[in-house]
Image (cartoon, rainbow, N blue to C red):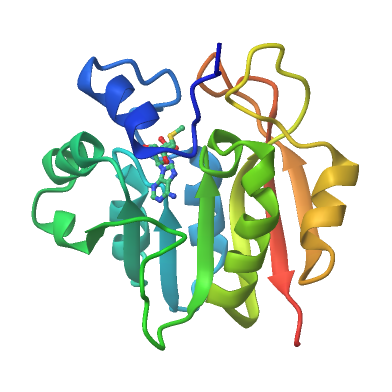
Length: 198
Ligand SMILES: C[S@@+](CC[C@H](N)C(=O)[O-])C[C@H]1O[C@@H](n2cnc3c(N)ncnc32)[C@H](O)[C@@H]1O
């Protein structure tokens, strides 16, 4: 029997439709609040696979020009509920296919997106991030590390992360995060990867 494919919209839509979202924190991760407080230079920010989109509000309140993108219709509807007028910042589209035109980002924020993708998509993820982050800009957020007997989520190892990102990014900082939702608990690290010049 074929395993369900978490790179497909339907995989996620089925879960959103029945409210089966064990990844959903219900609010803004404290590590992001700390980051936004420490880094006050305003820039363009992107949140791929944003789900409920709580973080849109945090980036907007910190003065950033924030865009989010999500490909599952019920997730986009949920983000609109959560965000009210700020829901207009959420594009209903596929991160890998959407045409961002000439827009590039000073910050791209990760939580629960990379680990939602089958590892076969990870090289595309790294290349797409490299294309969309401005030189000197950063890919920041909560990355999942460790073992998972029944993925998704698909966690990273240090070796895999270095292999994926090392060509385009330099790891500036990494820090284990205290508490999270049970499916991620003990596995999340706040990381900041700086885009190298080409
Ligand atoms: C595990 S959830 C994480 C949601 C959110 N980032 C959070 O931390 O709560 C992964 C989300 O990514 C979305 N997603 C997966 N692949 C996507 C793609 N190629 N383009 C846009 N959204 C995608 C799914 O629909 C799902 O809502």
